[in-house]
Image (cartoon, rainbow, N blue to C red; front, side):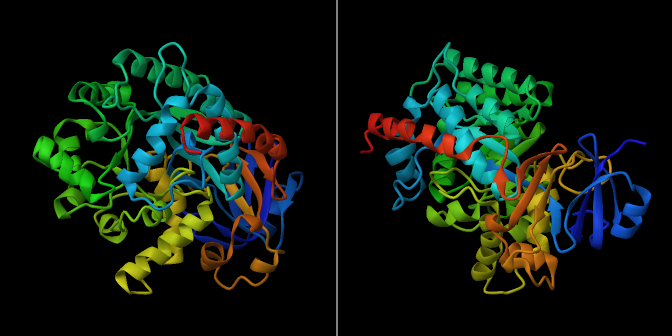
Length: 444
């Protein structure tokens, strides 16, 4: 029998039919979950296993961050008084021409450290930059993710309305796809910044790429009312209806935001199995509106939670996003039961995995799935008294209570510290890059 690791917990939240196991343990072997059960039974069955975790800890599956932009990691805390389109013109467009492989690499390290410390084990990213043929930028993202020990679903947020050539866009897609193919932890999807950001020619090509080998796509859809109005004027239907009739949804699709969606839009998403990434904090910062989370979930749409980019949501903190998801639905509906802590935990774990089409591989502590999990410190003052473990994690916990984070059976966070990279060195390396970037972008 292989020797494994037993992770002990006062509360083991599996995100599957096993539910909450009190005084339980999960067994990890070879990067996978091997077994879950009561602590006494597991210890008796596997007496040779190494033991970690503690008798008061809470253990959950790793969190799935369903939407973000590592391309924004060096420009936090800028342009915080704009709505989305103003913000794009004020910040994203000036920065995009100046991003390169080094800023991608260091920025991903910087944001990824924060993600790991808030329990994220998989980040679905869309890197937005101006492509330079022969000088790809996005492989730096994959290199950083591998060093961090953080899973990635990576895409390049392609758009050509500001002059990018098809050759340069193809080069960037191909470079990122090749990097992901050789990675231990990353996979590739075709990125579409937005339908309005692409010419008809590029959009048709993107749809074809997404459907080739069922690669799938990552796209912003109906984040703000202006987007819906613009695409209706251009194509006669909403962006979601246009994506459906042009075949984009025939491949796996994760759609970010979906705030301004009517009844027909919601049904279309459900009919085509489109996953939705809900980004509550950035939607509030940019005054975009409120995603109809309950209406989507009731139709069977898989809705996950995203922290969004470090420029639209400066804290890359999944626990903040999960708590905010609950609070935003409650204040929008004026109903304290609009979204529960248990439902939010589902969205942050197995719901996010389902939205990305990966629920057969991860998102729950189920034997045979990836050993991605978070250990919350039950000896921390914030979690000293856990009466309901779901409410304790969602309402009381923050990054300061995250003790260990396991990705593919390896610990990337130990005792609250990222151990795969030197955090101080990354912070120091980022400072001159950030100063240079904002200066060249004309932001200072």
